[in-house]
Image 1 (cartoon, helix red, strand yellow):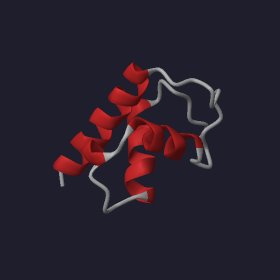
Image 2: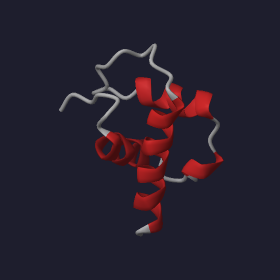
Image 3: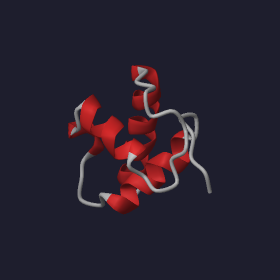
Image 4: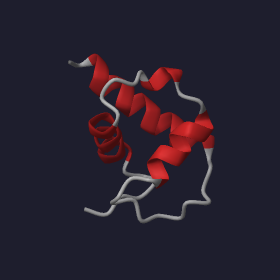
Length: 68
């Protein structure tokens, strides 16, 4: 499944699977951005760096971790 910047939840789930021991609230924006564009299914423009997109993904990831 192709991932785009607005696929907050799907990206969060993919990051959680790829980095299961990471607390998403402790990541800096540069690392989070890099990890997102490194996801195998990510096909959107890697040059996009809008903070609100990263915040949305980080929030979804945190909620996934907190739900465990």
